[in-house]
Image 1 (cartoon, rainbow, N blue to C red):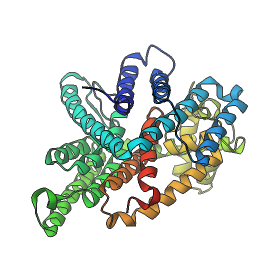
Image 2: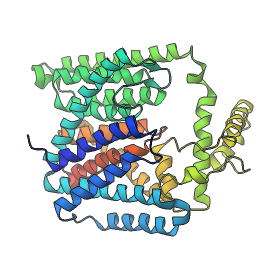
Image 3: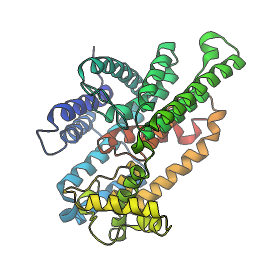
Image 4: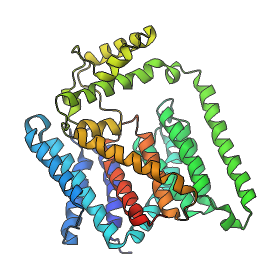
Length: 407
């Protein structure tokens, strides 16, 4: 069976990640996955023979991040340059396949995530047998083949695509996978509940599958939503046994981290490059950032105590923590440009959401939900090595949204 370049891109990235993070992460002191993925991108561009014509804003963005990297080369270094080139080439290869035949490319993407979902189920079973610490509260399940949390992020992308495919086996698999996400972190619980509800409302077509009336479909969907909410309530009740789950300290940790990372914008309004803020933030200084400053001004004694406690802990750590948010990651990397991009993305999501209720384009709806789900779960989590999948979903979203084709 011949493998196309688009399939090589999808399965190659998954294979490179599993191999590099499972077997080489403790051997090399750099991201082997990023390097291998970049080489694959360049190889595909060379084989393709030409670069598609992007809109001028893409060229301007590519030029901006490269010039920024060169200007801050002493601060950002070669690592940021490699990450920037990886981001650019990822955009290019995805656009190459979307411009050739976007329907065929999306079909392969959906098939990829469908296969991935079944791999995760297999991984779940063998991990239950062979992994000593199979489940950790506030972490989730530890898999044998696919590292955590990478598996969770791809699973939540896969759920809407499984609903789009429509087979009953896919629906069952998506519900089982949702359970593994709900029984983990708070971000997984909230984002999974949202993506399940949206998938049932916008993608579940029981009438076409079994020729059942709309009222029965509605009742069935209501039952599933109720089960999701019951699972949500069950987890909350169980989590009362774990102080960390509800702890103000747990949430304050991210507030302190975000505040410090975003504080670099005062000195570098156009950002410092991907991952660079982690090496320059200083938790020992007297300037904790505007978010923490605002929180301290609330004069909440308990909150102030937790903020000072967490700041003190980070000040003694050898290495500063990463951004713990894909949003903070992009904003600290690209500054004002990233903020404008995120505002525009929020605008598009807001405009498109009510249209989903009467749109008949299930392809667009599945892309919309997958991208939204990924952004939700990474809103308070790092996803540095998964940037390729964000680029993939964003490019598909823009392509299928273009010229009102979605509606």
